[in-house]
Length: 87
Image: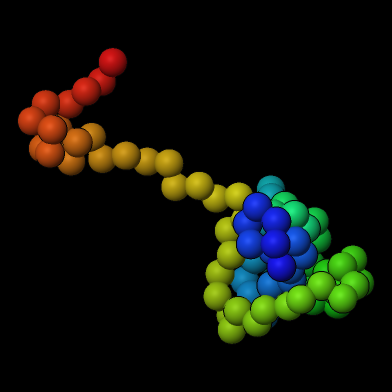
């Protein structure tokens, strides 16, 4: 283990991986190297792409690779600050 995100190589399997492509493909495994997605597909395909990588069973949990929740509630900022800062 190591790297920027706590691992150098990792396979997550037994998951529902939403690839977010135009076909709405769902995969069962995803592999990471150095914090970046390097393989997506069946568990066998990801294992073949990343031999000897450590694995974690996600017990059917959903994964949305690259999804960032970037919304903000300005009403809360206004409430806590007394007025919104919107420069």
